[in-house]
Image (cartoon, rainbow, N blue to C red):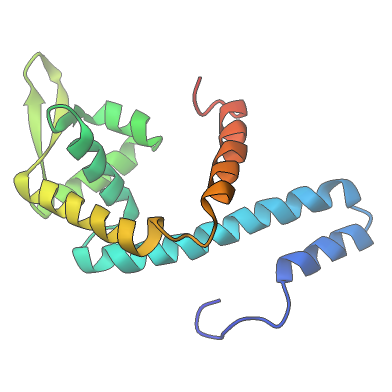
Length: 169
C-alpha cells in the first residue's frame, strides 16, 4: 500500500473468505488468484517505474526501445512493433512520438514499401536502452522475491494461460 503502511491482515485472503461465506465457493479461488496477480503486477510495476523514471522512460517506452535494440537492423515497422509488444497501434504511435521527441528513435520511410514507416533506434536510444536494462537487471529482475524454481513454475503456469487465451500459437 502506498503511504499508509502494511495492513495487519491480507485483504485478498479476507475477500476469499467472504466469497466462500456468501456461497461463491466455486469462484473464490479464481477471484483470489486473479486479484493477487493484479496486485503483484501493481507492486512490480511500481518497482520498475522507480528505476525507469530517472531515465525518462515508462515501461512501454522501455520495451519498445529494447525491441528495436534487439532487432537485426535497429528498426521495425510500426505495425510489427504493435504485434510483438501486443499493444494497440495507437499505443505504439504514442510511445514512438515520445521516444522521437527525446531523440531516442527516428521515423523513417521503409525503403521497399512507401506505405510503411519504420521506427529506428538512435545511438542515444541504444545507450538508454542498455543503461535501463542494466538498472532493471540489477534492481528488479534479478530479485523479484521468488526462487529460480518458483520463477520457473510461475512462468510455466502463466504461459499455459497465455497460450490457452490465444496470446501465441
